[in-house]
Length: 113
Length: 112
Image (cartoon, rainbow over all chains, first blue to last red; front, side):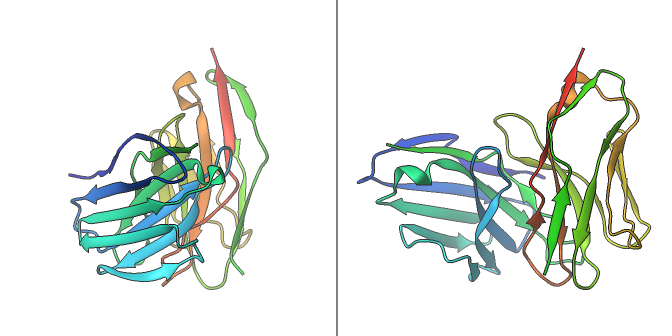
């Protein structure tokens, strides 16, 4: 299995809702990432988990809360989002090796009303 | 600091034309270099990579060579197809870090 899966594919939520994005990989990778991508822009790193511990938080607002229940799963909990948070949210994973290539999932298209 | 500069798009070509998308980088140390492709409505797919100077990455007819002397990693394909229409991102990973640094992306449009 060489893919990263993400659910749901699309999500529409109101500003008072609580929702979660899920990501799963079965490649034995020990690093997992959340990115946010706005239209016509490159992905922006949000969080990095390494060996199930949060290693990088790129000063993301607290309305985004990551969680890594085990080495294969990564969640992103969403609460009290703003319309400007509407974007494509991408999950990625990687080995801890010299090349450092990351493998991306298909993304969740989030719309905040 | 670490940065990647890509040519502005869109790049518009006819089918079977030769493709070059320029990418130059600034980095400390010896980064790994990547090209990712993003088709409409999808995530990023790793297209090819190179981890040291003079390495050539290749995949699906695309090639790029890690040129340390010119700090470049230009993407080339000899004959593009309509199905190659997508956004192409050049990226680097500074050795020992976990942060990909992306260029701004170049949209490629191939017409029949």
